[in-house]
Image (cartoon, rainbow, N blue to C red; front, top):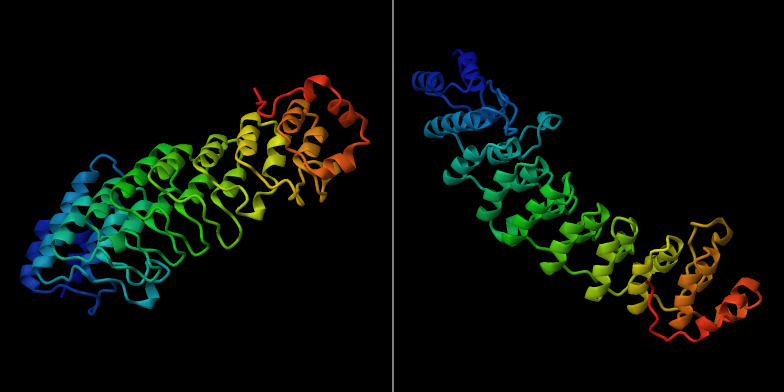
Length: 368
């Protein structure tokens, strides 16, 4: 039997030639014959690699959908997947037709397979579903369809790294695109507080990648912000990793009631804010009680003179030559007994403490 004719029809998305071949040969392979991969999967992978929303992309999708229908009419299994170990370097064992279609952006193919009984909840060897593949490849139309059609358990399914589709969406380039994916997944019931294998949440990833619009969306949708991962990182800790681009997010977390003392990794937060003279952030931290003043930073290393030393926020303000911040700390009683004992001999500090305008400040003095 001339299987090259079948392969040619698949590569060229020629439904007429395919139908003629199948009607004459009465054969559809599910991978048991001379074919290395099931014919249904060959249809999705042969010819055009994917649908990149380029000119003619929808036409390719429609033609492949017609071919899928012909193959299914001739007995092809819509849930057939790759099982051969020798294909691990090319495709993943367990990867099904709907996964290939979603990965390549063939929405019509996804819809047909779903209507024909394809299991949208199926996972491949890495634990990924069709939704995972669609998100990773930025196939928004497929993501919209799958998220609405999948059961909640499948919508929140985790891959081998514990990543859900919502978490993967925060990895997408351009915040505008990321926002659309996250917004739609949340609307479909995605678990906001699911944790990956390291205890990280979608909120932590959004903070890590400095996506303020996504952070606000997650927080306003009810994402938890008081969790601490096993490695000691909390959302606020992650936000401080990129303080300059996350300033608004940090203040919003504090306003919502984030406890800055949940993780010891947060102990240098005020010190960093002082060093960079972030007055609005300093004000929010002080007003929200961060941190206990008997817990000075032990690992702050932005300034050579204080490397590996224990410095209070007030001491850091003096070292960084930010008298306005120092005065603010003093006015709000934001200093420790050790500040008085160990720093009172410093002429600069003593001069600041004796300034009448400082001594007369009210406790609620605020930075401009």
